[in-house]
Length: 255
Image (cartoon, rainbow, N blue to C red; front, side, top):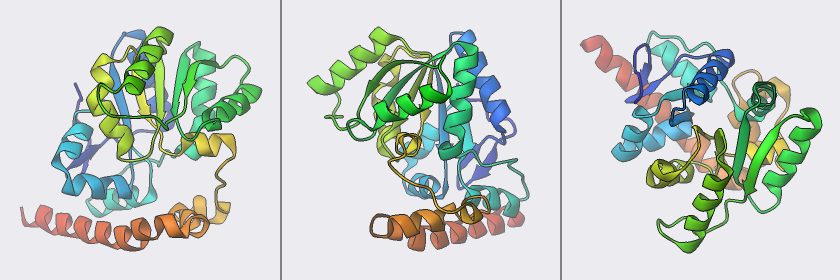
């Protein structure tokens, strides 16, 4: 069960103020102790979804670790008088995480993205980290319905591989809903939700210029790359998020 001591409450979701090193240590401890732990990431889009969906919000608050994956979440914490030390975005972290997994002798199972993308991500990661163990790979384009033959076959395949870490890349909130419905039946020590992690690691999706991605404007870079898909999320979602956080600030001060 999650421990909320020290968590930063942003729109009703507790976010752990952790660094990458903290995350690696927690993952190592979960695996070594034989835990069954959820490690989830949150960004502005995710917190907007949680704001209007109490079931999703409760799921995040029940997770063992919830880490910051966006500059907007760090800004919200500052406005609320708290501090999150860094944002941990999978486009960067997957390489450091894979290095950690290889050095610790742990194993992954990759689940998500279009056919062939996770395989290419694994190939690239293994070139850099030859000792990296990927116990299994499956794309995310299958019938996710509970009890469907495809869904049951994939759960059986994961359990046969028995990975230390299940890395999901369905995108939000599909990956979280899939875990809600299936995690109790999956034989893996840790589940990580990674969104577009395989697209980035495979080179399928490119990142924007470092001037933007390293200075809190990754959302602008992504919008420039995929305007048709992401315009509503960022041009409408970001101002809405800020307004909600400011409202939370006012309520906190009144109390």
